[in-house]
Image (tube, rainbow, N blue to C red; front, side):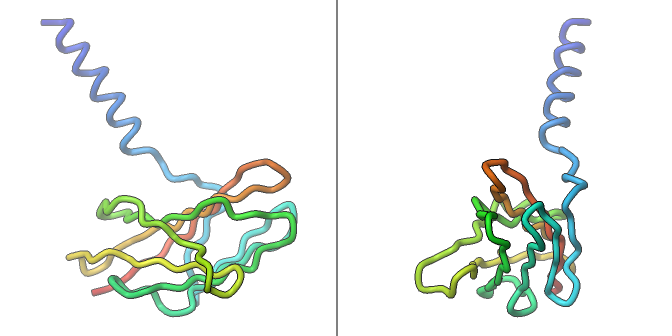
Length: 136
């Protein structure tokens, strides 16, 4: 009985530790007037949502990226309702340093999101997070 309880406690601890990781507290920004600014070793990194984010509508994001900084990957996740990782795509045919994505539909009045952008500076990987909300 004691071994079973111990095993269950360990499994629950591993599950809780992996599922409920705290968000990175450095390099964060709450979206204000559809823009966020970050300081990097290479200068200011800026992103701007070209329109107010709305669920189930195309969302274009413009990036002002300092020389020497390369965006490796970007995705959006729901905070108060898990909806998987939504890719942010840098596609041919879009203006340089512009990406496109779509937000999923949600039944919550306020949906909270986090956009994570992973980038490389001089071969070192870092990331920034942008927090924003959509309303039904």
